[in-house]
Length: 335
Image (cartoon, rainbow, N blue to C red; front, side, top):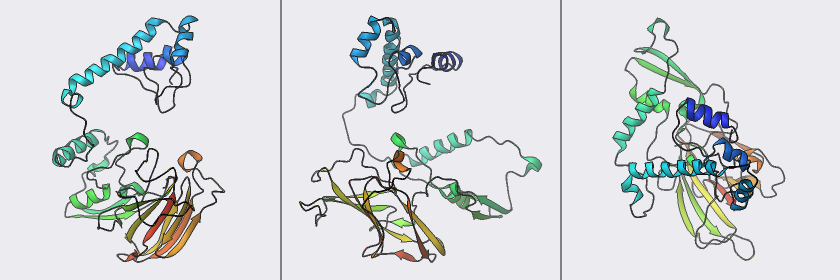
């Protein structure tokens, strides 16, 4: 794709009328001259591997890339920057400040989100004018009905100020004459879903308490934590993690209290890129310290996925203090 002039210049720009810039996916550039000539404006991520000055000098010298082609790409990038600046000068010239989760525009944001979602829905067939349903029993089938898919992967990973599942929305907005029934149907996900609102921090909020400990000289865990975080998701990545007081290696301990939404068997799946231990109350359920076998998570770098089954009763706090559901990881990535 990054080397296809037919697609980037022909289809994207001429046929579809794209006036913006074209950026490769993360490490999705595989050449210097070919991608430049195809019209790929920016190589991602930085620092660049294929667009270094020595490459440019050589490509220009042997006429594999012409100066005017570089001018075209540079001009497009500069024009795009100017367009963004003119569209939001208050952000461009504002003083640096910490990121924050925005709550104050919830009502208008929700209205916009609904508009975007409904505009993207196409009803293929409505035989017998079944929709809209005004009374009767309606079956909701599928794991995503109760899943909060509010963010993408990678750099699209964000924590929302608020969210709801399709099931929650249907329950709260359904007409009085409608009775809803849910079934998980067929699970098609490669991995178990992330843990949901049935898992709470020590203060009762949804999520997990994360405690970070330094490593002592003998390789053990320090007595007192260096820092504490509250995490909304049960997937944790330390790609750019740095906290004062922690060295190259550290321990992170995640704790949460689980209140079961069902009566039956609840399954937990764990994987990490390093060593970890998984407790339920005071019982050590998984100890992955040798890292002998790799699984498929984290681009093939994670441990083999391990599953623990727990008999639960609906509404009962099955995992409680003092230990609760706890995962301890050392310099690793956890899901």
